[in-house]
Image (cartoon, rainbow, N blue to C red; front, side):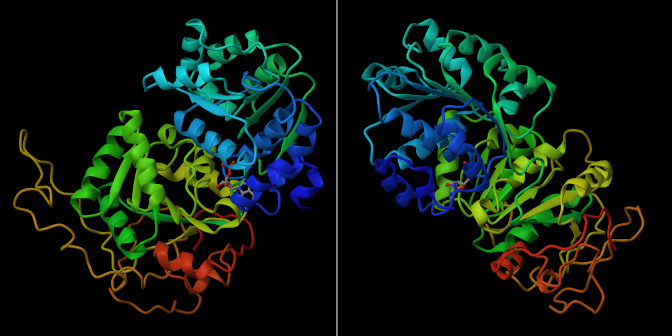
Length: 479
Ligand code: AMP
């Protein structure tokens, strides 16, 4: 199937060419024809499936006929990053048109948003809070809205936007088209759909299943060695980009600072950062200024960066959905990527649950030469502070780094202990062979393809470019 089969307005061809979209993704194949018919739609699709273009293309197509410089499409979205990302898709795909889109979100001054609204814009992409503010101030006129989209609706509800969303929907014209996209669909979503949509068609793509192009590795590591393990993996990754997730904003902040002191080009994305700081972090990560971006779940929503080589769950996500969202940032649009998850004693139950949702299975891997048995440092007396490398009398930046590849790249995936025990893995000899000993490291989900690859993220990625292969059911604790 090609985009030509949708019979889109020829003015959209230029944008499609510029975006290098050749074949519609499954969600686009399913949603675009229905959306073009003007049907209400519930799409269950996660980030990374191409869902943005699935609603942006039909919107642009529709708006090409009819009046200009009045708001005819409203896209509600949970975060500013996501709003900017959707705006970028509107600009890119709408390149051959004179249609305008504007973003509206909090955390920045409202001046430029008001200016854009005054100039007249056909598409508004908004976070609910600021939109309501501007509606109250009478800067926004939604009486001409023909199409409304609730994007990442599950996350909007998670973030407490339901009352605002309902308030906004109530002022929209009744005879509009409404599309709702969500990675998950529960009873709360069912209720929202019943209130906001009219006899919607349902389209489910990749429901609760991560992108096929991502491989999933687990690294068992004691809590106190997580940072060092991360450093070993990043050193081995060389120039590959890594998105690292922590559980809290404080952990994100602290980890980013530690990595920076160790000489990595790193920035962070979390709730305590201003909009400008977030934008700079994202732009820098996109452009390659930063090799590592440390983020929390909420702040990372909507990150659209091509070619994130690997996502590292420094802290285990709380839910399967969160895992899927996090790793949706790698392996996008047919590109292969790796998801690496650090596992401590507390994460057993979650590992088990993940085993059920990953059709290709999880693999336990180890960084060879890494000393997993090092004890935790003794607690400091009150008032004392840990010596932090890179500060004051510490060694100069990066000098401590081991030469890339020698220590970590030789890391062949190792089998996990077969039992449910969390015995610390025995460290392997540094500089070990690149060849896995016969029969080792191939759990039930092992593919022959993967057997040869290094436990280091960079090496694995390069070798897998030919396409990920998978076998068998997922398994927890394979040995
Ligand atoms: P999304 O799920 O909308 O965030 O899209 C994920 C990524 O897929 C983005 O980088 C898009 O540019 C890309 N993408 C969307 N549709 C296509 C397509 N038909 N062909 C290739 N890439 C696409």
